Length: 487
Image (tube, rainbow, N blue to C red):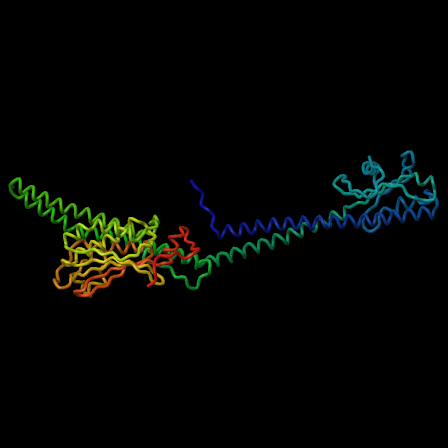
């Protein structure tokens, strides 16, 4: 079973306490080492002063025997710490030693010691001693061959350092406990807005994707989090709406052809029919099935094109050549409807985008224009460039679109009435929806204008700034490309 992770409110005080402990250890160790070094230096200075005093006293007394009582008694305690002395002759025999310490202890302290230039520290039976072995320089040649050994007891220093260490850790731990508890309280208080946000989300029951979290009166860090969360909800809401629209469109548009197929089949099966009647029924059902397939494919195309993750395969298209190929394809349909197709596009106009999508958008406009043009009518495809846009317009000379229908022509499955006949428009009502979806993918838009008895014009507007980014590939524009002549 996986262990439950610790909360931030407990992690932060823990790491804070750990850092305090590490910092306290470093400080205590550093201060302890400094104090120990300071005390040792003071002891060394004091010991050197005593040795100098002893040298002066020996020179004044003129003989070691006269100084023996002082070595045995007076020199054992000066300045708070005990100083033990042992004097050896040139043969290594003991001449004088401190009477307040056992002889074997002195032997252990000064064993294997030679003359040193400065005092050294030795440990013996849990105590520290500052030891110095030297030959005094006096006017007496015999005395100069004598070895003097000094041992200063550092026990008082050790006790002082130990007392300091205990006091430091007591104060430090008390302060650390108070600091950790205070930091825990502050962190809990700082996290209370986040907890309020969590509680608010937990109480959401329905339509979660439509809700938003308020960002007022929150810390700046939480504002960024809330805004990011709200943007994620917006994306979910958008995806949910697209899925809902797709499901509703499918149900709405497939209902009629499925009902037609069902009714036709039930009628034909109600009694015995001839082979020709069954064949006619199958042909009718086949047309309805093709209609269903066409509707589903169009809806899937719109749904995919509206996806925010849709990736465009950008190509550099010569606009006139692209339109000429499409006009060649639709020339047969135009001839059947006695419609002329005219291209008014400069040879050097360039368009950056995904070829298949742009061709489909222009194809849908050409198909609609031919369909609604009267006999001997004319469909014109022209391109022009303004200061900030490249505009491709497909216009016809048909009967126009009613003013009340114009705001809705890009909606899904909207089929308005054509002017003059007041009859319903044919088709599935997805052609212009697909065109608008393609333009949004290319960060542009499709616009429409229409006048009664004068025809309709649909324009595809491509922002030049986006075109420059498409041209650069990385979105960085070094030089503004030339897309066509200014108008």
